[in-house]
Length: 235
Image (cartoon, rainbow, N blue to C red):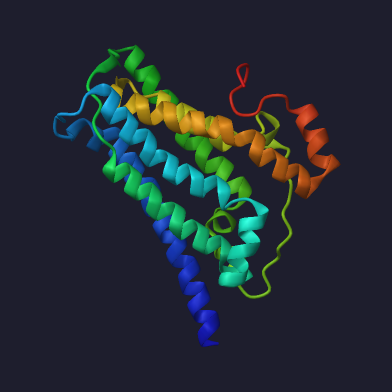
């Protein structure tokens, strides 16, 4: 009973730090990045540091989401905690990336009304789509809480309707709206937006190979019926 209680506590702790990491990102991206002190680093140096920071997060996020590393983690901990430990590490890394992000000199654009209001609407849409897509997948499942509960089902359901009938990866589409919809695109924000979205675009084919391995012909048919991966009309 005590071991089960510890497992659930770790899982809920992972869910809490996952939520905290998302809130910290929103604060950093929309507020803190504007308040960073002027750096002595040039554009190239600051960008290189930021790309290196995000690469560390991206490598963990992609590599440890694959089947072989998952099985390895299950042997180190337990199958019930594998997803939760992944969430803990990914969330801590994401918080670290946002905290250590270096200011990049320059501003690409600052929109004035009414275009500013349109950009705000795009960001709000990104947040709404993120919440809806996460709900469709199951927030507790994503955070590892569901798997840590007694008699939890390990069956994964293929989502093909709703937002998933629009693009195959609606969370990634929502992320694109969220980061590129800002009305004040500084160079600091642009590097974050570009690097993170570029990583997602690279990760999609790799991720879909795993989905084909899981769902087989069902996912192949889904790919044929829903053409766009993450950005309608583009990719």
